[in-house]
Image (cartoon, rainbow, N blue to C red):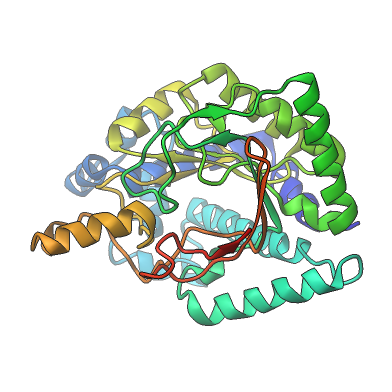
Amino acid sequence: MTHAAAEHYRQIFDRRTPEQLRTLSHLKRFMERLVGDEEFRRALAEAIATPRAVTERYGINVDPMEVLPLWRGGYQQYRFKPESAPWPLAVMWDEYLREMMRHRDLLRDEGEMSTINPRFHAWRERQIRRCNDQLGVSAASLTHPIIAFELSEGCSVGCWFCGLSADRFTGYYDYSKEHAALWRGVVGVASEMFGSAVRTGFCYWATDPMDNPHYDRFLFDYYQITGALPQTTTAAPLKDPALTRHVLGLFNLYRTTTNRFSVLSRAHLNQIHTAFSPEELLGVELILQGKEAQTAKAMVGRARERKEKRRGANKDGAIAFLERNHTTIACVSGFLVNMRQGRLRLVTPVPGSDRWPLGYPHSG
């Protein structure tokens, strides 16, 4: 059983001192504001001589003058080059990004199962090659997990850009004695069938994990059976703060992959930054989805529907999001299991289209 991805990920944190981790957490918060907050960007641009006053106002312990290649035009050309050496904090941040990218590649490799399940392995490899040809910039970010579980039905958040067009929330899979036994049995069988590749799995799809109040218990079972704590992605980290902190607590104990919060607006970003310190969110990637964020959205699901409606109303110029050939948010090349419905599907990413508006075909 290979644990290379988890070992690499833990080393990202373990090889650094507490002070270095604290510095990284504040660099991360600086970058979150830079990408997701137009007001912050404007304030930095206006405070040419005293940008430190801006970060201090936001509670960020970073002097922008010490990280010029990360944000100021004319200096960004030095990023990822030897010329960035005069700004060691910028070098530290970019080194951290490289390590995270390497972890992503190791996660893709962890889906390897040529010995334990050669036919499924060959199918997944074909999907990876096809995606590399078809998906444009989306392809590099895909790790092709071999399984995903839905622990509720629909989603209570209702993001306007949802790439999976999640249905309205109708209920969750309770962690009853019977359900817990079935859950552990299903994960156990998956582990037997796919070996260490099951470590790539996660427990959401067209759902939000925080809609299930027992989500952390399902996660812990998954870790006990597979040795990997699945990634959590949620657009509702403030819905149940205690549950969110339990999930972050599991991350602090086991550290196998980064969690993610989907941030829906600048106001949402403000709330998250108020609720959690930079140090608490070091292991959480903030996916900045607000309309003023410099983040691409895939043309699938509701984002695709919205664009078509605006085009029909001759409002193309008012579409407030970037595309950059980002063609799908689907990432699984394997099985999608809904525990509440008892439904199993085989899925894989494809470019969003009239035929496949959600960015993935499926059978089952």
